Length: 480
Image: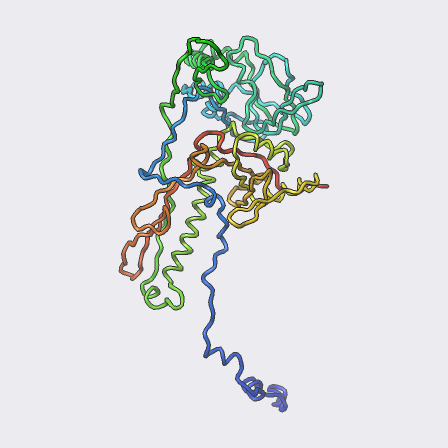
């Protein structure tokens, strides 16, 4: 059976695809007109560029020798670190022996065999929310390492009310400060605010180790002797001074002692090799220089990584190198005005807060609940949120943990104020920006031009209280 032509082709009254619009137009179409015009183009855009407030707000010190030494007054008191654990499932939580040297009394102790034996004597204990571990005035019979959980340290106020002294969280210790005391007593009470896990070591076992490990006994004796030396309220070797006297008393003399092994910061670097084909560099440069655009975006990426390193690098980054004595935990989880006030109270001349944008939003939610309106600060023509007059800068490079917690940094900056400073070296060969150079590496046999792009930088915390950290900041919404 044959099919009519009208069933397979267009109807007689329908125009063909090549003639319909053309026959109906009475002027040149825009599609055709674009063949004779040029296109206005933007420069290449990059989504990963951020405000990089840390790089902008840090005072940068020129380090001509490639290293910066932080000379400090001799410190007699020993700082407190964080003990680490390994978990093999369930209640099988063990102390990593080498991290026991983070306890002030064991700082610098090097007998790994003794440390390993001490670590095996800790016992795991589960605690429930609301359980009191010990009360103020009771004898110290155990030392505690917090593996997991949130604990409140509190005492009775002058009129019998409960006064909260602080929060103890993962990796913190309780009880080690009783070493060297004849009859140690707890100075405060501790209550579990959440269910958690602690590792417990009875003091009888500690005494046993002291008796049969001469190296440990000698180390603890040296520690106790050092703690009896006169020191100021910051733990530095004291300088004898007199005040308020009259007549002609004999003045005591002394000197300011220095650390014999000060820390040195060597400049770190971020670098890459930029490759541009010679034909692209020669021919395709109108209206924009291809090499310059490639270089501009490469430098942006390097600066982004530089700021990430200043925060997260294990050797010099702020999140890893802030003194543990300058770290506090949020009292209830979300960042409240009280938490930021506590962070401010830990140092003088706090210049800035640095927080993840989600942490800033969580702080605003807490302000809204209390009917508070945070202020603003004008920084280089930008209005940024502020608390107590201290600007709060957003920084998405502060990590968020899988448990949806993050940290908030508080910084005092500048050499004159013994704060946090950035380190770089200017005047380097073929410098493109301060501390960053672009060096021509030649053209290979494939006609590819190579440029080595390098940024040199580091960061130094001049004294421990120059940087503070509010930890365990919960950023999720809670039910109203």
